[in-house]
Image (cartoon, rainbow, N blue to C red; front, side, top):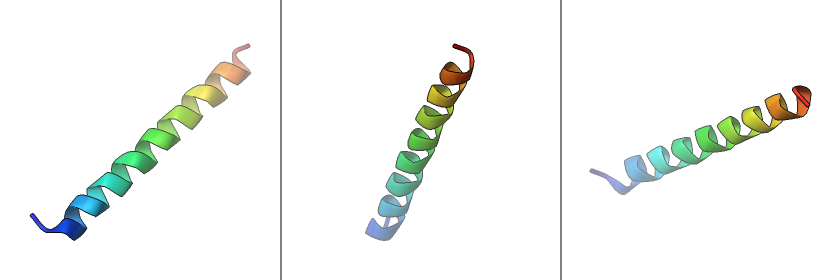
Amino acid sequence: MSARRILWFAALYGLSLLAFTALVYFIRAIAR
C-alpha cells in the first residue's frame, strides 16, 4: 500500500470524524 493512499484515507477519516462531531454538536445545540 502506497503512502499517498494511507495519507488519503487518514485525511478522509479525520474529515468525516470532524463532520460527525460538528453534526452532533449542532443537533444538541438545537435540541436544547
